[in-house]
Amino acid sequence: MQIEQAIFQQVKKATGLNKEEIRFFFEKGERREYVANEWLFQESTPRQWAGILLEGRVELVRGLHGASRHIATMVPGSLISEGAFLEDDAHSNGAYTREGAVVWRINRKQLDEYKKSKPEIYFRIVERVAVGINRRLKVLSTRLYENQHEIAEMSGFRLESDSLGQREISDHAYYGVQTQRAMENFAISGVLVKNFDHLIEGLAMVKKAAAMANHELGMLDEKKAGAICDACEEIIAGKLHEFFTVDMFQGGAGTSTNMNANEVIANRGLELLGKRKGEYRYLHPNDHVNCSQSTNDAYPTAIKLAVLLSNRSLIRAMEDLKNALDEKGKEFSDVLKMGRTENQDAVPMTLGQEFSAYAVMIEGAIKSIERAAYALLDINMGATAIGTGINSPPGYANLVTEKLAEVSGFELRRAKNLVEGTQNASIFVQMSANLKLAAVQISKICNDLRWMSSGPRCGLNEINLPAMQPGSSIMPGKVNPVIPELVNQICYQVMGYDMVVSMAAEASELELCMAEPVIAYDLLHGMMVLKNGCVTLAARCISGIEANRDVCRGYVENSIGLITAMVPVIGYEQSAAIAKEALKTGASVYELLLEKELLSQQELDDLLRPENMTDPREIPGK
Image (tube, rainbow, N blue to C red; front, side, top):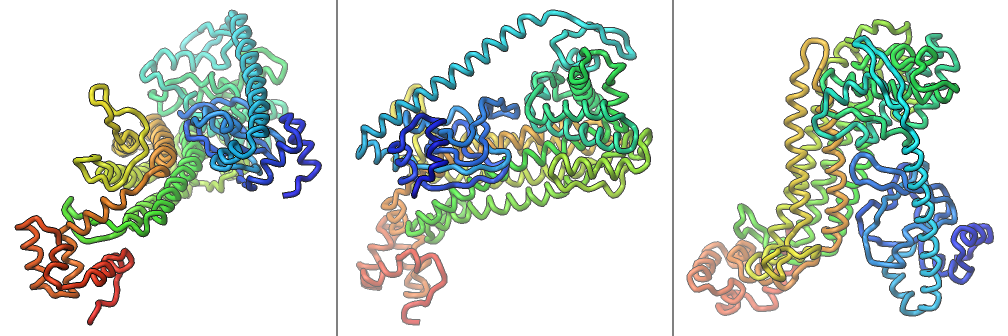
């Protein structure tokens, strides 16, 4: 590829590489386009390539749980995943693009080949990579020091009051008195709202859309609405999440989480207006941020948005898993093995058919989850307390739904009946049920992987899983199938969460489901761990599986089940006699067929070809 001068200058400025070193990338690599909200790589997955960012911006984030932390933003010309030059290790961060990006990538195999053929150029690039990483570490260290210093200086307090009295709140905190009381009342799990970025983003989207609708309908003046919207934009961009400090397990049907959001937005909005935190006469958490809303429409809507946002990452991870299984299906298409029913020998098949079937299972689970997610587009904003729209102006429900669709990017719809939409949590049950379906399928696949890799001497030993770590503190050389075991346990957790979600939705009484907080936790945490499980299973297990071809074929030749495939050729009676003799003597069916000259070796081997053993075919001599 001819390097355009503009690209060369851009890369040279960002990396310090010279033209010869840059040309290395463009001669050996390939262009890869990423769409909006697509991950370039996930934290903890193996480094597969190094690249140069040509277009767009890429966010580096840390944190496999729901609360990812922004590390840095990569701009055009930057090296991406350059650690691949230094070590064969896992990514310490994840990388994704909000708006889309173009990367020129070179894979690890090509890097290794170039290291051997052009070591002088390769190690010059390594030197520049090391310098760049060191500079980034200095920036992060400085940022960490400055943040510590800033926090150490914040020691003042402010007085806030609610209907129960006054409380002192740290001047450092953006939350207020109602959040403070919730922190004291609900010290339960230690898993706080701040651990779930998408829930916080959903809350901020709801509040921004409400402010936009309220301003258009004359309920909020321009300054107040603008301050609320600006504060929400900051939260959507990842700021102030550390102040969402309420436990996910809480009473009040989510009121404490809603007020946590109202208070953080109000106090940040006050700063944007040039006021101090707590000066609520200028911007109030209830009167202004919560205007025309109730927890009972704002909170479930935020949960739906959080699930929809989480679903993007989950579906991408499941698609990667499906693709990894598909690739193995193609790779193993010529590996003949014995199929089994009820753990007993059945009839021959290929290992490729087995893995292709797994891919179809995942594809089906993806489609079912996507169908369930579609139902979450129905929201009850404008319902306020119970669905009657009390304290909201005429036209608000339709307008706020329109504004929220604009803010979120989802094609949201006003619920057909707002009273029903406020009390009925069955949509969450439907989503949970389909997550359980996916978990069942994935766990079944992991069970099979553990069986097929069992041994290696005293089990099936049909496949080798990648060896990830020593398997025993007492048995030298033992290696366990730790990744399938991990994913099994994740799937069990998701299955258990489905029961909790069902019970919580059933607990809806009269006009409200009080147990929505545990529904939010189980759905969001379940989606998060299932997504991480799929990423880990694909990257650390499926992609590295090897077939023990001779073992697989040996089972076929020695299996009594092989005789089933011979029935159309030699007849049932002779087949039954061969099976009986094989069982009695321990001889293989293959050997007995040759010994009795029922088939020639050429005929038998032709019948045993994978394409003849695994699909409907013309029967010889028929």
